[in-house]
Length: 233
Image (cartoon, rainbow, N blue to C red; front, side, top):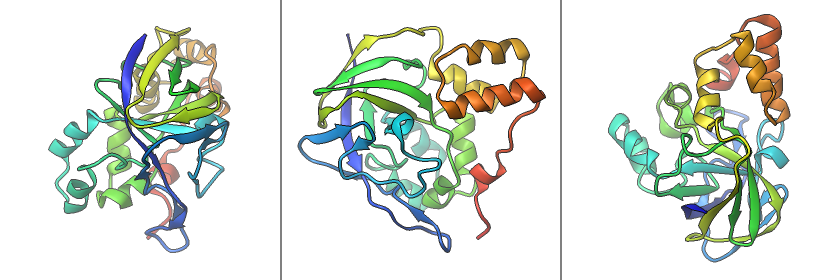
């Protein structure tokens, strides 16, 4: 079943970033023609900190093009206005349209795109690099609270993809768990044991299993400060 379309395919190289000693490949640029996809992501794409970026569970980052309209209405900095004119503002590998977003995408959905097959692995937990990129000090927190966070795919079958490819939904084993529901549990600081057990019954990646198990065991949320604010300037 067709559910959307790839507006842009983007990759980026690791470069020095805004704060001393920091590196990032968040500045993704559009690719023309077909791009090879392997189990670790798109050919030519890089990640600076592989402890928290990349790997099989975060091979490809997706972002919904319709979200750009909402951000244009909210953000006023000249840098944000510039970034939001074209795909890639959020460091995504795939910018998707027309209405595909966190409410329409469910955990473990499987997609056929081009000659590759993907599985939705988790939502994005934004980090401080968005603050610097948009020159908006609380941008990462805004992205988290808005639910317009984006999501990651793991690669089940390597292949070739290109801008314009149709996204075909081939499996939906957890249709009652759209990513918006899981992202809201995180943003709303939910620690309710029954809810945590329900989330832990899902095929979560290791990082999200650790997050929800920690809330179940302690009754407290994990610290967000380092992720949302980063190192000192």
